[in-house]
Image 1 (spheres, rainbow, N blue to C red):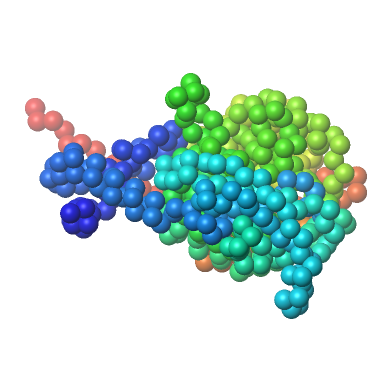
Image 2 (cartoon, rainbow, N blue to C red):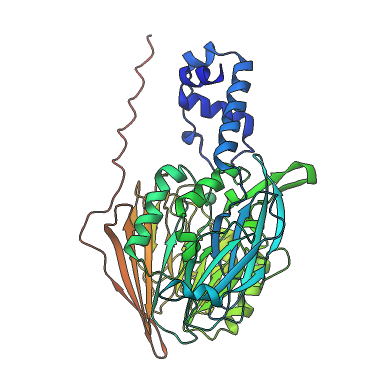
Length: 491
Ligand SMILES: [Fe+2]
């Protein structure tokens, strides 16, 4: 009976029915994002059938995404020094009460396993819309810098395969990493190709930055299941640095909180707790081979984070500073400007000459030149000086990007700061640092180079910026046809 119902009912309608049953709301989604409901179908199906379809769909999702005694959703992150530690987190069903991880220096044959040491995991329980799961985490400590390790996770009888990771060097050795704007929707179907294309483009990338909105509804286990499926074993080999977007915040009516970090975040990611109370594992920093990578949480406590940021940038031993957060301070999309956040954070970025800011949220692509808000304010406007947006005194490069298929319009005319923009293009970025040079490449979902520049450090001077935009047209939506004026009313 249920099977027959699913066959005859239009799929998009089924999704709408489910959304009505399950959604906790989405403040940022424009009305245009909601597909029109096929009226003829909705009129033909009774409300009881809607509930039955929703239940059947939920059962199907539970079957697909339920935890088992086998470890899944295995992901590397850092909670401490990446030269001497490595964290791993994974999921099982609640039957696994004592979880373990084993680690050894990797070898060229299987004999390395004899040298493995075993650690007991910390375990927390999470009950979701689909199931109850146990999340386990281990932080491998006292590791040797610049060394390849093998590890596995399990319960002593059921184990994952052995995975490799390499600790960071204590020296500012060259490295690359990958940055993704919002994945958010159609994650298994259409975002998976982007993370896999990125990993084959830069297979030696040392970490993956996710600039928020990893999923659309962060209370849904199935969406996180798709996110982990898309990354697959890459997540177990290349550490991730996620920062939370607005879609990682959920309403909690029972506690009186209008919005707070999703219950999934902290069990499934083991991240630094080196910022402010209440922002553990969402605002944090990691020093990787001479570069300080900072995650700010643009969803809450923004003013407090400006003060914290000032402290950690005043005492920054790294040559390069890169910051990621979700809500862009130079928005690329209409009616989404974040002027308050810009006023709170940009003076700190300017003061400490932050090199690069990686953001999401706008579902478009926009990359600036060197922007310095102090110069702009002195010029009478809260925008960079000059028609090109380039500051002669240096500044920060701001990027808004999107990796998933959900797309919005760019605001037109574009801000003068933006050097390269795009609409309707899924992108990923490969960023490489080698001594005093940072190379940035934005590539499309098919791997084509779409944007590029190089920053060069200069002693006692601001960064030099060399534009390397490929000779291809900007990818923009065709202009909409002008509205047809209504015919005059008959007199
Ligand atoms: Fe967002």
